[in-house]
Length: 190
Image (cartoon, rainbow, N blue to C red; front, side, top):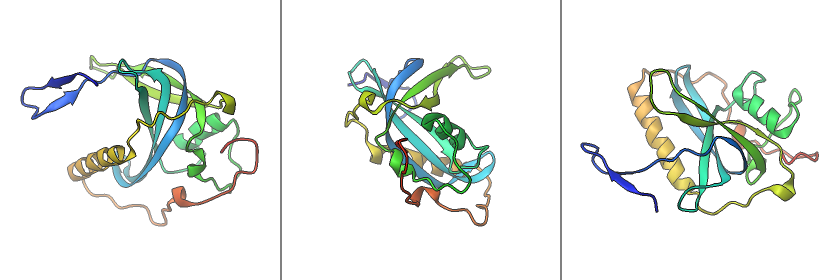
């Protein structure tokens, strides 16, 4: 169990956060969460949160859990498009339908990077990219990930952000590509 720390004026206990180690790690995608209507600096967007378990372990033996956030778009200039293209090792064909659910349980190599935000003492460790990993080398999910808890945190943060920002409108014609079901017809797992 993680050490608990009481914070004066904080109103409760918080767990110590240990960032995952920088470098390459085997990982498995354990969840994708679609959060509609998130307030961003570019207006209201539908966001996707990818959750990965790493082969690296915390002091208590549980695997590190990391997430990467994307706008729900496969436009070739989007971060999601670039991330998935590197991971699967090929670009998307124009008009290609892609079912994100096909990625759940797929292993990869994740590269963790770090940076220090301007004027801050803390170091932030983030998922930079993913690349293919042979199926025989995939790690197994630990069963420690709690998707309900992750969804609650995202919803609470969304409510906090949306109430603190001016209202924007969602672009007309926006679709939920996450729900589209497609078939995988090649040797790439997604």
